[in-house]
Amino acid sequence: MPIVKFINENISIEVKKGTVLLDAIRKAGLSIEAPCNGMGICGKCKVVAKGKLSDPSEMEKKIIDENKSERLSCMALVFGDTQVGILKNEERLKTVNKGFSIDVPVDSPVKNIKLPGICKDNPLPYADYLGYHFNSPELYKKISLIEENNPEEIWGIVYDNKLLDITTYKKNILGVAIDVGTTGVSCYLIDLSNGEIIKKLSFLNPQIQYGGDVLTRITYCMENKSGTDKLHELIVNEINNSIKSLTGNIYNIDDIYYITVSANTTMNHLLLGINPESLAKFPYRAVFLRTDDIKAKDISIEANDEAVLTVIPSISSYVGGDIVSGIMASDFQNNKEAVFIDIGTNGEIAVLKDGDIISTSTAAGPALEGMNIECGCRAKEGAIETFDIDEEFNIRYTVIGNEKPIGICGSGLIDIVGALVKRNILQKSGRWSKNLDSKIAWRLADKKFYITDDVYISQKDIRQIQLAKGAIASGMILLLDEIGLNIQKISTIYIAGAFGYHINPDNIKTIGLIPKGFRGEIRFLGNTSLEGARLVLINKQCLKKAYYISKNVKTLELSLKENFQDVFVSQLNF
Image: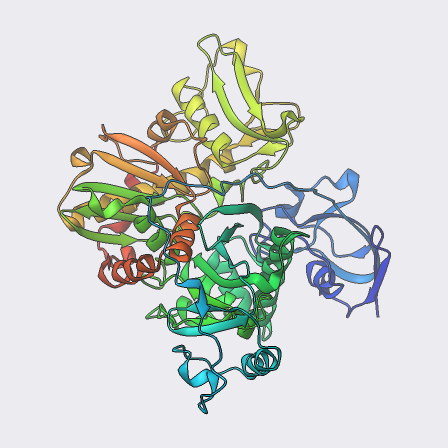
């Protein structure tokens, strides 16, 4: 059998002849991104490989540099002994782990309560007159020790009417709010006694190595018997690592009693280890949209043994708890007429009219997050995040971390395309203009506009952006029509998601991500999904609000609209 040796890791494994190199990498327990799930179009699984491999296809040759022995691991087949160098890509994700949020009083369902002392003359068990329900052998053991030691004070950590812990001192009571995005994950560690955020943390969703969007991950689960378990294990392990980082040496994991998660419906299924296959098959039914509270340890999340896990309820199979959180945190429902957009892989949208809300999700894809773009990347050090071209065709840009540019993140892409359209370098159709001014024409070569010697935006990239922005704009038009509005009547559009506060609103209009005719205000909210999870942690009424929203927001299935394709095509031009 062929031996595949991973040079940097000093790992060697045997594989069957004809094994896809990407599968060999995964078999070795190594991580590599594959946002397109092995379709050979994103170029993110590129490696340096030498040995007996299949010849690269014409499609692969367009992405790799054969002179450097590059291969796409999802396209190369192993026919004999092979040496592989995985390209290291040290990433410090710059994401938005804050967002706009309404103010609520601190009234967490988890509280520190001083309990009555043990009455030595009372024949009733102490547990019977505590006034709180519990069913844990560990808590009975703790009560037994308390009876032996006869302490001056007894404290209980309670969740509504349930006893989670019992101690002889007033413990820290901590909670963790988590936004599980398709691309990135953000967390807060929160003191539940006062609602203060102790620490923030963001990291990449490790599931991205098996697909950049929900459909590719669902496909992975459908095609691999252990796919669901693998993706569940990846996200849970990373959450556990983040909890350790959040608590550090100052706090104890045992002090975490409440965890809230806000995510789209597919991410919720994978978090709980539930196969999401039904979401991709007619009638696209979720296994669940809402769950009762569960113990965090039941899905292997490391916290106090009695810690409660609450999953923010979803609206439908493709409009998730992240949108519920956003609507709640932004106070969106208290407008008269407004639009809410979460710009991400799923492009979820909600439209409000006189208290009624209708929502949908669009197949925006990961292009606006820097994926499926030749020089695209997430918001990390070295990513171009802002861009402009002045009247004299001088270009200006900023780079995260003030590093040498290595790629373009989502906000940079929107700025670049907006500037190219504004300066007539790019036609409304998405094609490059001819007869360009010599001051800028030299940057255009082989249908690629070069920003630096190594970083460019290609004609193919432009098409990806057109598809993404066309999906969002057409979804907005159809929602507005369904509820009896048009874009001219909308006074405010709320934009949430990882883009945060970095996008130039003029460029959003220029590229047509928002339909033509909008004259209102654009408000950037940041990560409202995380904020919604935080609100549920610190105020017990907010979970009730979340359930109300999830049950009362209507959904529109765009594919069932007869004019969907026509509207979508009409929104592709800039």
